Image 1 (cartoon, rainbow, N blue to C red):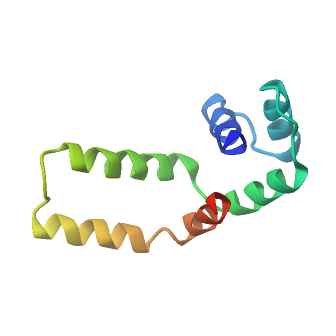
Image 2 (image 1 turned 90 degrees about the horizontal axis):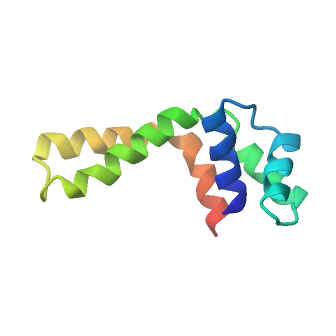
Length: 96
């Protein structure tokens, strides 16, 4: 998780998410930086628009809190959004 947090921190600060920067962030957190995990994360993030993914995650997290089930037409829109995110599938491999 520290690698993902590091990538998010670099993104938030407007820094390039590369091997050197990510390794520095992880090391600054007091953890040994595993280069294979860093390379795997960077490969998974290639072509991913992090800002867009975070926005989508915020919308999905807010939906259950909105008071129950969404109307049928809204559910169809959400299904289409999920189909459009194949780049994020690589991230699931990092979690086991």
